[in-house]
Image 1: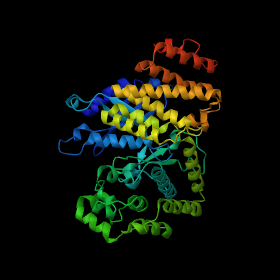
Image 2: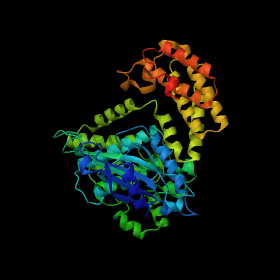
Image 3: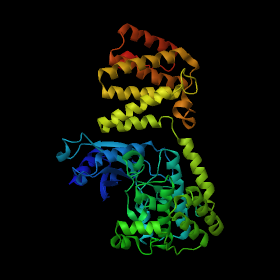
Image 4: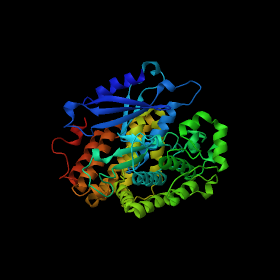
Length: 490
């Protein structure tokens, strides 16, 4: 029922696309949208997906699925782009199903890229893949997890398994070279996905989640060890990837049918491992990943390095350098606007998320050292602008008063700094500033502040016109030609 409702809504929301399939997980639903034949030459991408939680799994005494999904969305949105992490591209807000209309104002959906397969297809033998590509996928997965740890994860992913490592065939997107990496011979790009149980111990008070075949021994005791608990799960995945079977000695699905929770805990804590893999260097590091003592497991970097070394030694493929270049490129693409965008993007989902966003913005604004210097002025303006937008959305009188105060402060500070103000790089990053006029960026913030002053009625008309005239005099070249700010914002 819910799938039919969502398909109808998505067809209206994206008329150039049509829903062509869906996948139901434990608690969530992913719908696939594909460009219609008539629009294929005019839209990009040709396919994308949306993910939401499944209201059919909502139980009065069970998990708060809506709250869990909101937590996942905020964390997922907050992760900066990386080649080996599945990105959250933004949110769509669908009306809730009729039976839940009295409980939820909206049903949020996360837009995300389409991927061709999950690693399960490779592990189960549904798709052929040479050992070299499997080593690349292992290295790429480590790279994605490293990025997650550097940019948001506190304890770990928490639910690593082949279903949550997605594969993109780059041949469908790019014209690749014949050899090397990536190439027509080695086209796969792995992306770590599904942060539903990430940091659940820190934020939700428990770690006994995820599928038991991948749980580290400490997880059965409701404990987690940063990075090491994920490395154990990655060791299980690596054993499946290179041997086809679980290190428990049989196919994972077979063991899952036979073993209960106590049997899985006994296996995890015993150290009894069946890892029939060559070369020995790969087997040894996988066994280290699976040691019961988390202190003896290798790091993600150790595992990535081992995979890259084998790729170089056996196949003469220089993957380590490529991964390093991807990390550097991802760092360059990190936007100063990202955190503020996250707060605004998720705030319409619920009043709780709006309050969380306001609180986080207020803390971020207060944390910027005073008096403001040129190095952090752009950051202050970005956070201040987002906070004003959020307060206007919440819109109680105290919020409106705060917006008026912040807006006036923005204009006064911009006027006080004058034409020497150049916020381009600080606001938009180095990669985007080449064709920007510094005055345009300054005026962008000032005009929105003028609009907010008028909205909150915290300033008289005469003073508003005076501020407008001063800004127009300061930025005559950048000032809008078609109408004055007062006219345009009426």
